[in-house]
Image 1 (cartoon, rainbow, N blue to C red):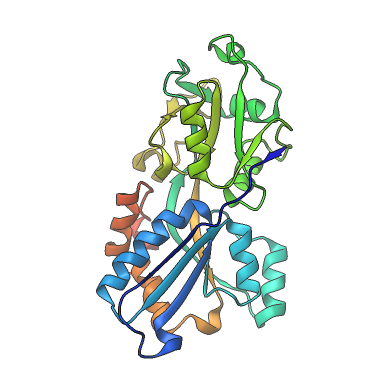
Image 2 (tube, rainbow, N blue to C red):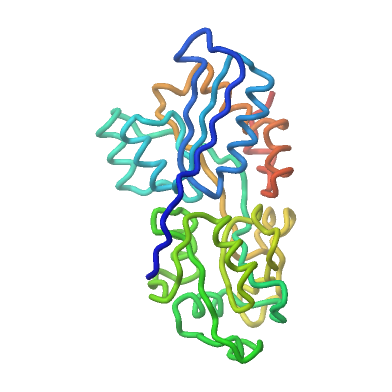
Length: 284
């Protein structure tokens, strides 16, 4: 599998000076799917709370989980649920299971070039394409052209979710080009008329989202707020943050609650993901 060197993607913003270091400095690390939303949350929150400094970095869900275990981040962003082994490592590191918060929903999108006449695929067809078993667009009703695959690196929660739920645990084709983030996947597909990729719904500009069918007998569904919330879009997921319970207090607890408040969830929608149902929101 080809590997494209990962560029460091770091977003740091600060407004004012923290009066209490432990309360006024928050580090957030992990999912590249979540990074644009995490950046927006940080920007807006710091604007309302000038004594707080929030540093947001990406790198992938696995990177965020490792940082949580190593106590080098306060909050770990993840586009997948935490693994059992990661829970065990956290318990070794700080004696407790990390607290999990659902912070948004996402319809995991499948992208093709805007000129591609294909408008819909089944989940099985998407899986067969990324396994390398369907190699030409004509096999799914498209032009006679080889399919170019763009995927995520294996530290990505999106990669793991896609492998589990679409490839059903099978390996990606060796020809799949590994990209350092969803934005890079999208940019590559937008330039390649034979390309196909996948990623979070908020990254859809520049390429075409395909409608996805659960199976041949099901309707083709677009990833919208309605179809994700009611579960009819077949490739949907929660987006999560994880935190050491011992530090889930003070400014960190306040920030986590704000993310899940009406104000924080409005930003989820503004960015292009889908807000939590009312029962999962923090009431303020």
